[in-house]
Image (cartoon, rainbow, N blue to C red; front, side, top):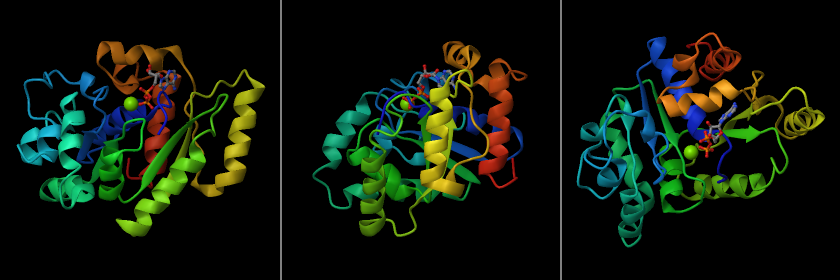
Length: 238
Ligand code: ADP
Ligand code: MG
């Protein structure tokens, strides 16, 4: 539910690593800002998007472009339309049923707000991965997020849980980063991944080349950290 915490970067980079080791991976952009979709060559204003899928205009399979279901501002419109419909919280889950069998892993990139779109994402998921920035205010909003995940779990998706916390944008030169990491570990114990994603300039440069760090600079520290993280979160499959 926060912006700029590394959600889209994690989705795009993990998708790349999973695919390279042969895991069939689908990434779904649920943010009307379409940051994940910016990695695609297709123009999300011309192609079917997740907004078309949620409003019933396109099948999920038809909206997959290079392993990503893109989003654009039309998603905000689809969210409004969905509001008055029966089963509105489960629309994404139902739409993905048709393609689910084709993939080993589906990663859903959520927007930085709790609305019907995010609820659709949480209702369709089996696990929640939360990237936490090792900086000031890192834990702000986390309590609210956990309450919301619990609400979705109680009402829509019994199995849902925050299974994975990823410490990211870690700057080893600051005491603060270390303190945040310690605090998160003492709260969340073994849900916190051992592998930490460092803050690096290379990671922040990669999106403007339309590439995840693992393509942009495969031997960089950031790319190595993401490959290790992928191994960890996939239970050794990646
Ligand atoms: P969110 O999807 O949560 O809003 P993003 O993944 O878009 O967050 O990341 C926010 C910004 O921080 C982007 O400009 C991204 O390139 C940059 N960024 C993400 N992870 C790192 C990192 N480990 N080191 C440096 N910059 C990062
Ligand atoms: Mg994002």
